[in-house]
Length: 507
Image (cartoon, rainbow, N blue to C red):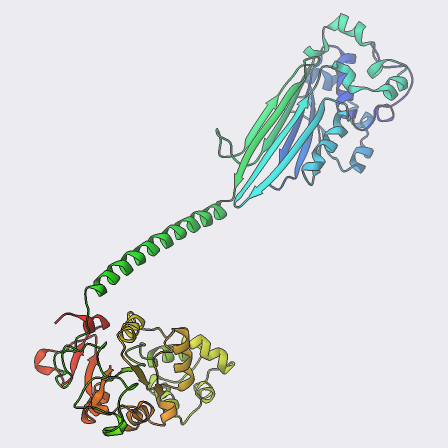
């Protein structure tokens, strides 16, 4: 059997979408007992793009009988349609192989590329590729139909039949099949799809492959995978763990608060530390005298019949808050200052005495930036002591007047006071406003004038021994707030407490 007599080349007769497949089929049937393998591969990427590759392989006998396939197979128009052509090349078993591939940019383009292989009504139809995303996860679903039920008619159309004198592929197919057997025995067709991600059976991509024979009924193709980003998956697990820890921490806080609340209900009064004898014991703050409502007369206009507790004075920079100097040195050095600790301390002391503004402190310390922004950044590192706020609230609940003194600059004290809800600690006297720092008596005098309460009716809680010595000289009851208790034979003449809970212990 021979090709039609007219001198028409394959590139003139076969439409671009058919040449790779049709040329192979013509070679099989014209040359007799030759075989052709046709494979269509679809590889999909996670983003929904991918590549379609068509591979046509002729066996050794066909390769020997058509040595001029390179000149007959003109593929310029396929290349112009963005198909990448490789071959014809020899195979390891002396056959001929031709590959053609084309990429697609998204799921909606897959079927259009498949149509270029066998046509819109061809063997590869109704293919859909869908892509859905969630956090750390991409789901891919592909479905379609491989239909070879029309047999060799798949590889021709009316225009081609007319060009070949009314004979599909230029051959009398019925006579040929009567001579050499069914076409299905000479053609092996495989359609294969690969998707990234995992399925129930595999964690490293998935593949489905079908190989129907010519004339077989349509074969459905479907494949679904889930692709998870490893880093995002880890972050999601970290998020779940953080949420769980937060829930546990909240539960612990609720338990602690409940236990503390029940304990407080069982402790009716606050007791004065043992060494403070001038104040009547127990120190029941709910019944203690107060500035408000006191009758005129006596020292400073305060009516009284002897020493009694009327004012609790707390050292803000040392008792309510951790001392500022340490965080200030760390902050200044972290911002590029070359000063040593003693030089920074000297600048800070001048600011505390009102002889240097905060802006001058930053500038002289070698810290550049907007002073207000520097203040905010620095104060974020100054922390209120654990239990301090609850201590103040309990004193106020018992009707006690609470005031504060602080060796610091007034704007910083005011900012911390507002941040931590300590507005009811009043007055709050900063050394920069008074012009002196404790242990100078002038700082205490500024507070006495603001309250009208005589010194002997104060209970002052301070972290500095020199300040307490000065306070005791003025007649105040004193409490040393310290975390490091000295030996009993070295203790100063002040009551000692190691934490706020010590003020609420039963006698």
